[in-house]
Length: 220
Ligand code: HEC
Ligand code: HEC
Image 1 (cartoon, rainbow, N blue to C red):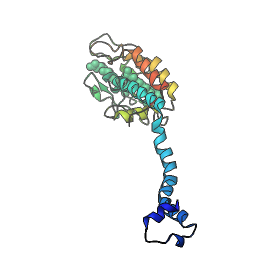
Image 2: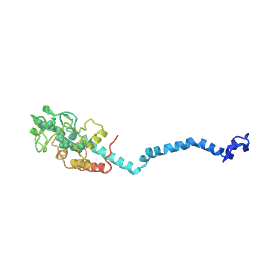
Image 3: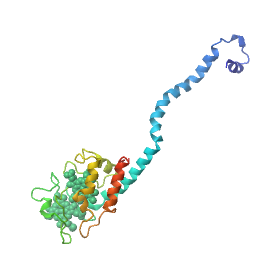
């Protein structure tokens, strides 16, 4: 090794070299690179390795694509007419404010004088523009509005999963709710003049299950 360094300075008398001088030169040249390698190793390990997990990436992509289907239903008029931030329900395919100054009230079931179930019965009214109905027709309570209208897809997704915003439901509770809840099912039998959501109920439940099984990922 020292020979390489000797050749860099032809004027220098080879006998003037101390035996450890070559080693010192190697160190001083390589120390910065060595230091960089030591510092960057954990950073690379932390920063890059999660991206090098194709199985997880694929799962996330499947989950996001399922959620993109789910949200088509959630944001349809049959759902957002109740899943709104406002203090009143909306009505019809255009989502106009509910007639007759109906209000949410604290528990979502209206004000003391105008309860939802005064008009909304156990089944849809047969009359055109009559009130639709299933048992306990109501809005989510004022404290947990579960609003999806005008909310970004990522926030719809995070809100859906957040126990502090969804009355403490876990993912399985959510799946049960979208599978069996009478109000959800009503969306696919809403009475004349109201368009059902764009996916069938069976497809919606299938996508919901798929979304959960592939990690229930949310868009950024
Ligand atoms: C008549 C009003 C109404 C309609 C219409 C309605 N919902 Fe809801 N929804 C509610 C209420 C009320 C709750 C809260 C129930 C509770 O926790 O007591 C709720 C809760 C939910 C939840 C759990 C909330 C969360 O954030 O995790 C989901 C999921 C849901 N609804 C799906 C739907 C879907 C899908 C549709 C449309 C097909 C729909 N809902 C239509 C009233 C409605
Ligand atoms: C005074 C009677 C009355 C009361 C009280 C009432 N509604 Fe209604 N509601 C109706 C009628 C009638 C319709 C149908 C309007 C139409 O189709 O043009 C309707 C429609 C709706 C719709 C629209 C359904 C859709 O998807 O188009 C929702 C949602 C709704 N009501 C929620 C509620 C909630 C929640 C309450 C209580 C906070 C409530 N309503 C109280 C009479 C009432």
